[in-house]
Length: 297
Image 1: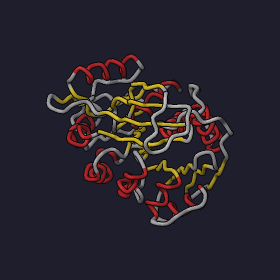
Image 2 (image 1 turned 180 degrees about the vertical axis):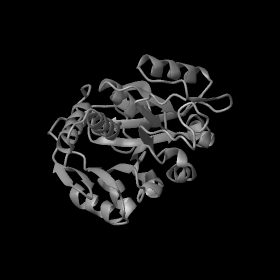
Image 3 (image 1 turned 90 degrees about the vertical axis):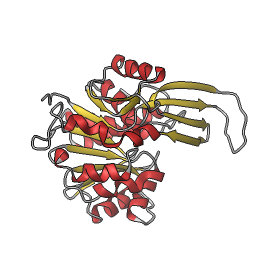
């Protein structure tokens, strides 16, 4: 059994097809811009930022054995990620995500992660078969977990002995999937990374700022939370502390992946031994740098 991985990234690894325009857009807009295809998905976005901060993430995901899948696996390996434990399916195509962004933010997005959902618990086999852990010898390191997994699988992870000694860092894939994190709301080893809207969905109430949202999640039984609110305040909260900071003001040129960048920068900072104040500050600056169009280092 090899447990030398610095962090496992479990969840969606797919191709991001992003159309961006400098124009403000509305329904039906037809404007000039740029269309790019890059490796993406919540787990992938987190892993890419972890690599930039000097960590070596191991991917646990589902990728097809089609040409797009081969290209994606090779891209992940070139970027410095461990792909040895990726579940490669013969009959499931490689997942994709498509988004359109304008000067006024995200206009629309569609996530086609059906293969990841269909693969289900097969992506977790390395944590049971001795490759990365066993039920009676659970993985003890950091795990970044994304909410693109099915609710059934997330519930299984929350209750599985194979995860009982891990440091779980959990993020929803989108506000529409925020309720999938309910199994971790009272989990004894989970840190939740959510935005203001997602916090409201989990608590079934509206919040006006990150601090009140963090308090609401803690009142619901959360062990530790980080709540962001775009360019407004962000709060890290636990039974021992409630710390709020405001991110630097920047010109926003992209938004897809900003939350993943924030989460990864925070994880990497804490892994290096940063204080709560330092880790939150570094994560906010990394996210601000990312949305301004630069590489978050």
